[in-house]
Length: 92
Image (cartoon, rainbow, N blue to C red; front, side, top):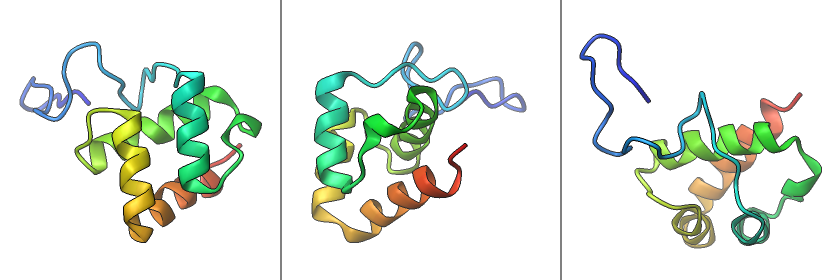
């Protein structure tokens, strides 16, 4: 995400990459993989909401891809719980 104070984009994100504010949509294959890893039916939620939550999770866990986030969810219960909480608590 853009940092107005330093006029920089953090090193984790590159220009054109998913950010929380202008989140690009998550592809169907990535959505299915992440849904399986998280245990949530992500297709049931608004696409913009899921994309924004995924973008924040990518930045939080310093992961460059949705597939990488899905791998982290499978390996780490804390990552999985944080993603689930983000999607469920901030919904609607």
